Length: 64
Image (cartoon, rainbow, N blue to C red; front, side, top):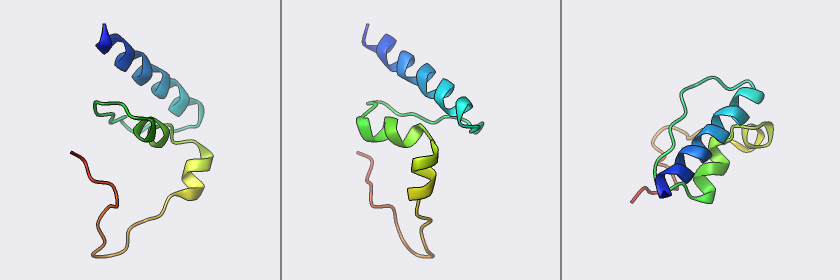
């Protein structure tokens, strides 16, 4: 039953990304936290806030 929720979120993200013109492959890992869902939306607000890492910088977020 829990996997049904994950796949429903994934399908909703695919629809949202298509609406915003994002056609790259969706990579959503479990658990689908609020942060991961928000970043996966790829809407114009997120694109304006996106910061490209400079040479030698590592991501602030750590996957456990």
